Length: 112
Ligand code: SF4
Ligand code: SF4
Image (cartoon, rainbow, N blue to C red; front, side, top):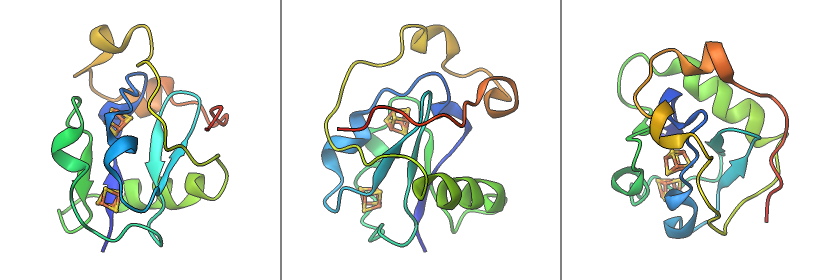
């Protein structure tokens, strides 16, 4: 199994998660992070750290789409281990529905 980053990370990207991951398996897009499913050791430490409640274990039902997104973009985006500021409109965006469809950017973030 692995943990996956889901919809509510988009345009929030608080980044609290990257500092607690013991194996540094977060990867940064322009407006979202993902977890590399082959590197995640399923420790679960990041899940409660996410202010947007966006991290889930893939054992929960209905997360196939997110597993694919995390796996695809973890191979394309740079590794991120150091927390920076959240995106400027994170508070307004937090909790909106369907953010991936509306706002997702496939562009890479800056990484460490
Ligand atoms: S803490 Fe949550 S919202 Fe912030 S970058 Fe990590 S997964 Fe995204
Ligand atoms: S579950 Fe653990 S290893 Fe996996 S991304 Fe979260 S902190 Fe990293």
